[in-house]
Length: 349
Image (cartoon, rainbow, N blue to C red; front, side, top):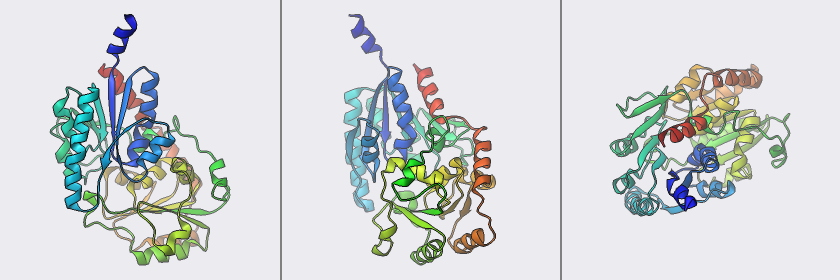
């Protein structure tokens, strides 16, 4: 009888995953809350390597669908997946729903669950307008540029500190052997995005011409590894990353220089103390802060990137040791975001 009563008292927490970065952000919270006796559930859409990551981390989840390409199909899938999410929420009856920039806020209409949304992307205006009326609280980094009103709670951290804070991440040099490298080797990671997200419409990063020029320049100095959201052109295929995605952050830690269109990886490098160049017409408060701190180079167009890379090597401006020191110093002033999430949920009981 007592066991039954204890089971009924368990708090149910649902994590909704819509992108690979969300897996990294929530994974430690999922593990820790399970250890603390919470009933933890995960819903996920098929997006790039999201499910591969969940499987690698041995996180049980319920798949609720995939978004197709094209605005019309995205809208149709939004409705279908939204309905599946509603049915899932009705089935498990969570006490709390946690998500990043949720695309499925309507699940709260059939539930008494508190709905907590995390976002660090100011330009995702459509998503913000969608989830804001349904959110109980909206958590943003304190450098977030937009004012989201009374529901907004600012905290002194970045999303990347939920999984790359020293409390949770220790780099493993053994991973380098899998790509034929050592800690003393010079190598570069390039990141190309797909530009399929709704907030990416009309935006730009590296042109195909400058991608070619960049690769030609970098390969004279070291090895190139490309991480891409979509299939690479045949001419770049030889540089495609061939490693388990759960090990990507180890490569980012040891790489000589990161250059890419992805804001998340650029911010991850800032946290890890890896020199990074970010090229994207979109900006964010976190990236502005990291740029001002000298942790990354940020460009809205790719016009000056090739020249900067050449200058880094010619004038010996690629100082990774200094980048490490700067990173460690600024992390001391930030919160461990996983601990923040755990304390938030625990204090809500």
